[in-house]
Image (cartoon, rainbow, N blue to C red; front, side, top):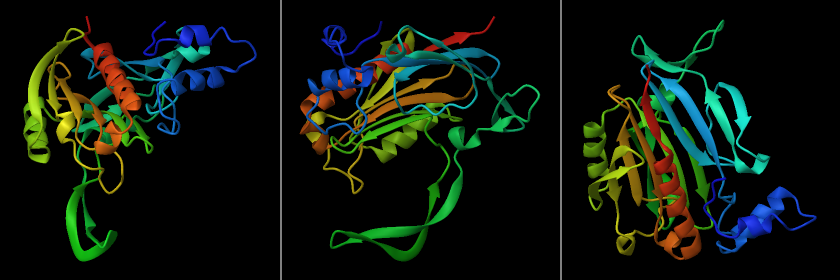
Length: 268
């Protein structure tokens, strides 16, 4: 049984309560009320799949939201239903310069929007007197690179994101350094993997962005073997997040758990 929060075991002994209510009560001990739109239970689903016909990739994500994988071949409960499930995802592979998911007897599923950048022209906006308005110009933006897993919490301003890219770590590090020049790079050996971590000091986190969500805080980056693909797991935060310290500490603990859970194993 995998937990982040202390005290959930004793909560489960309460009679007459549904699982969701028990989990919510436990979360309330660690979060200011309303801090999370969807409470983190402290339990995790496991996702595992064959990648590029060379590796088996496995990682975990919080039960109850965020990970939108297609093609779960089968699922195996890890224990009681609230403890999480093991999801066996259909193979992900590359062919003719695109990323696909394999379906026997059916056409493969195009996954490029998750792994590759798709550029498009989009109206440019500016803020005037606190309101967003179009400038009359256009700018090029990336409309690909959708997240594999995404959750956000309006009350505390956090985001939790897992992405995979058809980009190598060197390219991504250069791009991230441009986007986030105040971040500090370090190497971290966690869970058998050598990660790059781009981290911003909590004391210098910026005010909330216009959306009120996210902002550069901790971004973990890992090559997926020698495939030329990379994986990132990120928690976004701002000064608003620091005003919810219990929620902030839980987000950091959840991020650490997800990083520790990643396995990239060469296939025989």
